[in-house]
Length: 151
Image 1: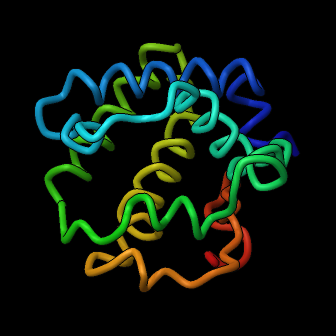
Image 2: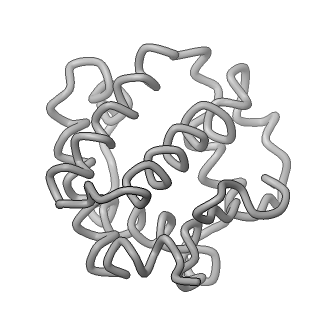
C-alpha cells in the first residue's frame, strides 16, 4: 500500500506543505508567537524531513538532523496552549488546501496526523523540557493512524 508520504507527493510534496504551513503560522497572530524567538533558516526543510519520516518516507530526519526527544523538547515547557494548538491545526488544514492536498482520504489522514501530533506528543510535557526522556523515536503514521508506540 502507498504511504502517506508518497500519496502527498514525496519530498517535493512535504517541502511544499511545510512551506505553506510555515507561511500560514507566521501570519497568524497567535501561532506566530511560537516563532517570536526566531527559527532556523532551514526550518521548512527540517520540518518536511520530519513529516516525511513520520508519514512513511525516508529516515533522513532521525539519521541526520535529530531525534524525537529533541523535537519534543523544542515544544515543551511552555504550559498548556490549547488555542495555539487549535490555530496551528487550522493553519495546517489551510496549508493542505494551499498545496492541493484535498482529495479524500489523504486530506483526512494528514489532518488526523497533524492534530494528533500537535495535541499529544508535542503537548505532553507542559511543565519543563527537562521532563522529556532521551531516546524517543519519531512516531509513524499510516492511513489508519498511529503505527506502533509513540515514543
